[in-house]
Length: 345
Ligand code: 1HN
Image 1: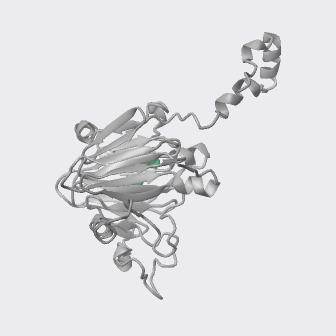
Image 2 (image 1 turned 90 degrees about the horizontal axis):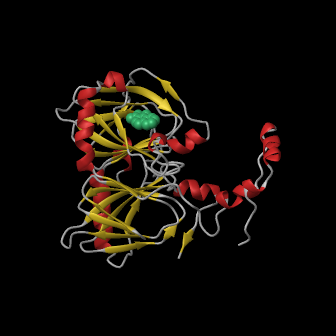
Image 3 (image 1 turned 135 degrees about the horizontal axis):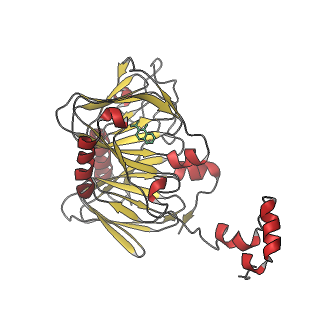
């Protein structure tokens, strides 16, 4: 490829004249913004160990009362972006949130979309758009853009969950803001019971059915059972994976990030092709190895890792007699909507 002129090749008085007019020559930076063949990601393959972060999160519980934190979170920050940027990838934010018995994280709503994957503990709930959603380990609870949400805890031990937001993208768009609220009136229990069977949806009258986000809670017991049933009924299937979708439309459950659950059969190794979106793996049950060229992460239960886009990934169940279950978040809805989605063989 042709060598382009460098900034230093230009006379200093010319460069200063450009700067004075807020002008910049493109050619010295062209290869940086358009690298040949494949992007040069800032996102670094990174793993966060739950065993290592848990004591630090519990310490945050002692150091900072909920009233001083609003949300008591340790952010899983990717060093490739700079820790202060609070990014796991270009568009994904990850945080581990702690709620102690009796605490309330007050109601608000904001433009970024959030989901919560429950990691530990019992007795907490999140109320989203008037629906009280119990938090049980492995459940996925949506908090889409603009919906009111608050968290409470009636149990007697700490509850921890993983927050996944599209905050870096929405912040980059200069579209990120919050509205504070007051405690919500609970108008119903979580509507996932109404959507309990795939293939049939409530008809004709149901309060959430006409809404953009009809289902807010995806209980792990149901998702796990769906994976087990898929593995048992389709033994030849390449990936035992289910996507979290909107049960009314079949589309991705949120607009920007995509979510799925994957079962690795005992002893299974699964090759994922290189795809343009970055991915996050969070281990719900069992142990797995996540390998890309030059890096390999062992994920124990509740560990989380992030892999940049355009990278083939090999997943391996570390057990030969038990299945392993992972939660996956990626940027594929965003890439597909923008027309930049790619799969490379
Ligand atoms: C948020 O609203 C929550 O509601 C958690 O629990 C983490 C990180 C950034 C922006 C908003 C929550 C968040 C957040």
